[in-house]
Image (cartoon, rainbow, N blue to C red; front, top):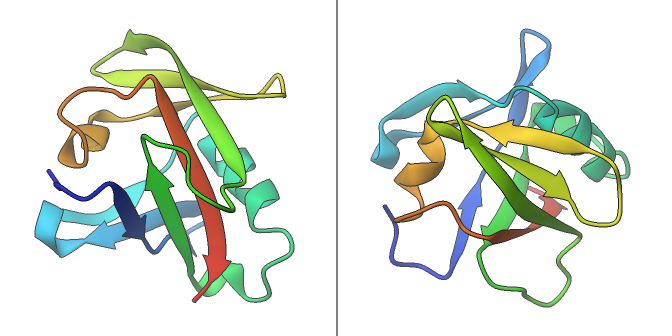
Length: 115
């Protein structure tokens, strides 16, 4: 788990879904599932070459330039469902979320950038 207020991962497409590696957290090709890939497709639509990797900044606190606010809905199967603020989309973040936070944040703010 990180003590940082802002965190960064570098997702990329692998075998048709978004994944990321974080050796410090013991994660290799950790997949995003259940609604999150569609959110990432939209988030990265304007980033050339995003499928080869992009920077994904995230925090439990708002920060300048964030693009998406996810709001905690409920826990299920050790992961947590989040609603995308301002839309009807929702996605499930698996237990790997706890590698970055002590507990599931009520809100997660996200920004995608080119590498």
